[in-house]
Length: 369
Ligand code: FAD
Image 1 (cartoon, rainbow, N blue to C red):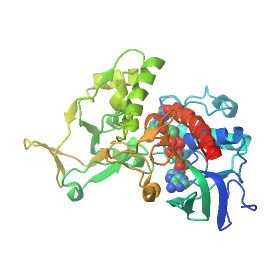
Image 2 (cartoon, protein in one colour):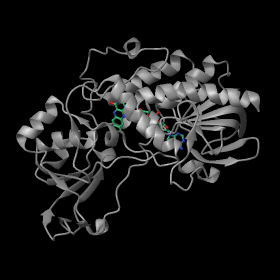
Image 3 (tube, helix red, strand yellow):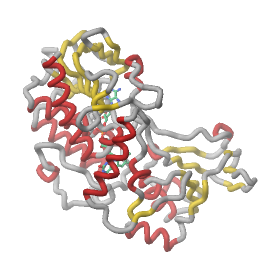
Image 4 (cartoon, helix red, strand yellow):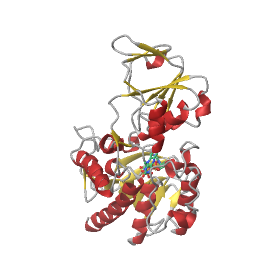
């Protein structure tokens, strides 16, 4: 541990700390900032382990055309506004370079003990401590703040026939540029904001069809802070009851932007219901109707990346992890574990707040026990 430096893989074989934070995206960095601010020593008291070789969390993998003007909104990390690291008026900057540059400056400013690339393989309960096994070094910790996001767990629904499709099947995660689809018929599946953004770009260069499970709920008018809180409260209520968290769009609806109005005018938002089967050369609905396709682009969301926590058996009968605590970041079954950037905190503002709540509650719990 003593030789380890942030930004390099930790070299020692077993490192004992109070808290391990897993993941250095918005949620993990916020948690790290608050742990340090509350007096936990970087390196000796806590470490942040991040799989990615570079700072930036999942933002570094977003498609190049997602810019600071086309993201919903990226909330500042605690203690240092985005504008201190970058010119925020340069709205055409790709989010995939701007946000990582901000995170890198943030890690440096607060001298956060981020070790990378370090992948946490599995976490086991060893009585009064957790054993955190990574591809580099093993850690022993009294508490865990898990901030591994969702990007590494793309979700694709299990539709019969998927394996026989002779065209290409991609997920949002794989998307780079619409030009890759020129001349092809692309079926975009999904009713969220990413689906609509990609449909917008692709439909400007080739033929598209749009398929969603439920009729999309477009929302006109402003979405104020109160409406935002109400939406988050619905997701929070689910995780407090031990249910899997719902997607944010399922509770907020899709705001009608000028881009969406233009898409409506171009006739590309004529939504079809989800098909029941995938054939060799397209998709088929229950009434036998078929549609030929070269590409199926699954914009069907992500799930929390939590496989490494499986030995802790945190999931309950409801299929989700029952959460408690001020902002529902604490795992009911094991109060030494906090999940941040999960469920109600799966947004940049939610991740920020969750990091603060988790740091405070976990340190109080460890002090008491
Ligand atoms: P991430 O940024 O994914 O960070 C997780 C980190 O954990 C990564 O660095 C990863 O490498 C690491 N990791 C994962 N597994 C392991 C492991 N086993 N061991 C070690 N490290 C690991 N929110 C907004 O507020 N505004 C927006 O405009 C917005 N746009 C979005 C657009 C898209 C396409 C998507 C998918 C999401 C968007 N969100 C947006 C949601 C937002 O990006 C996240 O909720 C937020 O950034 C919180 O990130 P995080 O820290 O939870 O996860």
